[in-house]
Amino acid sequence: MGFRLRRRRFGQLMLISAIFSAVGNWATKVFAQTRPPSSPSVRTIPGTDTVDLTLRVNGTARAVKIEPRVTLLDALREYIGLTGSKKGCDHGQCGACTVLVNGRRINSCLTLALMHEGDEITTIEGLAKGDALHPLQAAFIKHDGFQCGYCTPGQICSAVALLDEVATGTASAVTADVRQTGGVKLTDAEIRERMSGNICRCGAYPGIVAAIREASASPRGV
Image 1 (cartoon, rainbow, N blue to C red):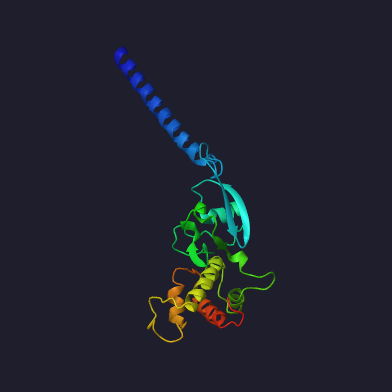
Image 2 (cartoon, rainbow, N blue to C red):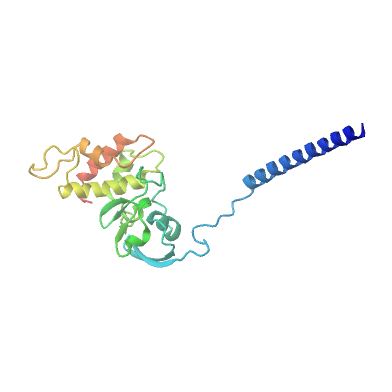
């Protein structure tokens, strides 16, 4: 009888120990999930070298000290303070981060900032001349080419490059005849094809097409 009691007592102690162990593991996981993240920001990772870089943005030289892995988009937003260019998908699929580099449109989330030292970078903030809006900015307002406005900076920068491409006769996938006199005719199909890399989740595409069509005929030019 005494042996059976001792064995039963031993089993009870083992069960209690297992319960306490399970509770401890659960509490550790909960604490790890609820405590504030301790990972440092991109500017303070120990052991990561930084580089001194000068970017020419909207006609002004801007000196920054960044890590080599910083994208052009993050350099513009987080280091220079130009937050017009938006981070949407961060995979080059939505076009919200579109800026102009040497007159050509690029997805700034897909390129490193240090690759563009010496380039002429233009963001949405650099299109207006003082209080005078760029023709495309004015046309977007007139034709309601936006709703929430998140994609609008990228849409407008992309449209600026689009008009330059058409002016130089650059064909697209829907250009019927690249040999036609007078260059490429900017039809609605041409606009939609050339703007297909810029997504508007609000669906303001009719206004965007109308705005670009009107801006293309602006006497002020782009």
